[in-house]
Image (cartoon, rainbow, N blue to C red; front, side, top):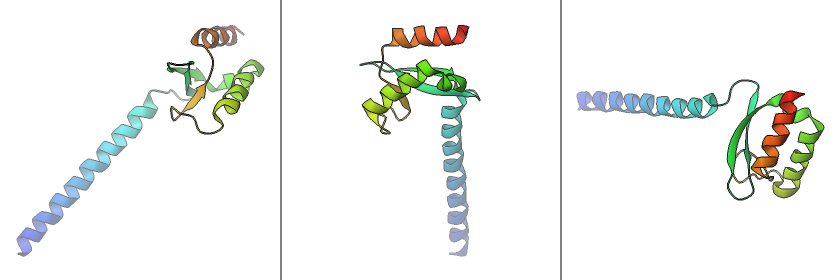
Length: 102
């Protein structure tokens, strides 16, 4: 009986290590897609596309207008789980291109 309990304890430990490793891999893979100093944003009116932009864009007055629009539309409950901007993809690309040049 003592041997069976030892085997059960070892199996439980291995299972916990496996599960914790999978959880760490899942959390690191989702955050590793976003480089340091950047943020993931979802943009679009019906279909949401994910963009990764520099955090410095958040301070620009034109981008602040988009953030205010997002606050009015969604409050703090964003449907995609991340920051969602309710504007057209074309407008967002034009804006970020202009910010990138300045």
